[in-house]
Image (cartoon, rainbow, N blue to C red):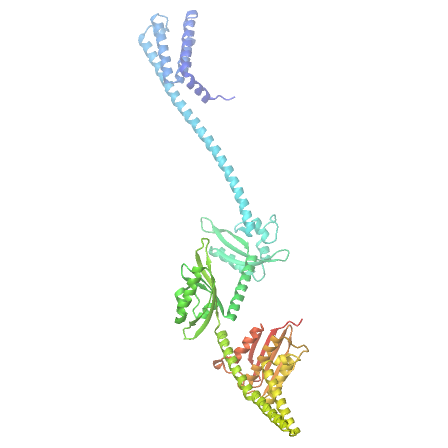
Length: 608
């Protein structure tokens, strides 16, 4: 069992105020009793010295008091002649001894005070050290829990984001992969990381060189890199991995470690590809239909336009389009009306539809049909104006020309009825009146007169059928479109020098009035163009089935289409395209290698 000096001095220091006087009283009493019964002896002096030492260890004040008591006791003994021999004969020696005792007591007391202060400082330091150690242990435990929680969160985040981390030590060759990095390759997290050669075997052959070059660049230059490559999992699934790599250098600047992350972006790339395809289809649909979309920010006044919007307005594509640029394109006579419609829509919160003209830089005027609506934020304030703008110039012109043609046709039919059928009927009426007068006079009727009237009636019937066939050729053909096309070819052969043949390559026929009428009019217009503009000598009119579609083809041996610089579509061509669109079909007009032109219209048809 070891001796604890700190405990002894702590006990003496705390109890010195009562312990020192008790010890001194006990020592003096014991010393006096020894003198009475035994006489002077060294143990008596030793006892007094020990008592003084104990008192001095208790503190300065107890040491001085004890020393004073000892000196008084020795002086008393010296006075009565009972003191030690060296003190009784010489008062100087008594004083010197007393002074020594007092000095020793004071020194001991002073040392005790210092030592006790050191002990108290050490105890405080021990207490603070224990407190710091406890706090450090608590912090270590909290940090450990936070680290474990961070690792759990990191693993969860990597699993959700399909992102794994990796590290390769270039000196030792050691490789570390996170659990998610294994899962990206279809492996268990307990599997050891593969060697670099094995890792390259998992990469798609076309991407191995890319991976090697990128990692070599990172290692040689110390610059970070981002790259993508394909890997094949053990179950044969191909995944797209996006990886980033960077280096860690030591104090000497040498690359020791390459680390990075790898993320499975297969679904993201597939989604981006679908978006890209959807955007491409939308752009193509807008291009074909001449429809552009826009979105105008009502706060900034700037707009976002689709590609076709820039094409329609003949403006160079840019990120945003100022509202003033849009207004500059609008025809001056329509500008205020367009502004007013937009302001009314914003104020009333309703949709709007308008048709206005724009003027392109080359002076060309186009007609735009715009449809839009206002969008609002959560507070109900208008924020955006979105919609579409379609170039309907050709449609409007076609509608105008159709109206004009309809008016001309009505006038022509009226003149034909008046000059042709009307005259025939007038002649019949006059002949019948002549016969009627002969009957009233009692004259006999001649057969020749009656036959003349009959011939006039038959001629009138023939002309009436001709008019009806021109107005509704398919309805009057009991056998459908095929009979109407053959009848059209017969009329061409009868009234022109062009030879026209009509034939079908399948047994089925079209009795649908709308489809048959549109195809017939396309054939009629195509033949007319071939004769008037192409000077065709021979025309082949084909009609048949191609899968679930029906097609009509007009092939001629005329002069063909004009050169590109001279190529302009007239009313007839636009009319054919319009009818093809009405059938949800397609019209192709192309030159033939051997000369002439081929016009082909195909459209879907419900055969079942």
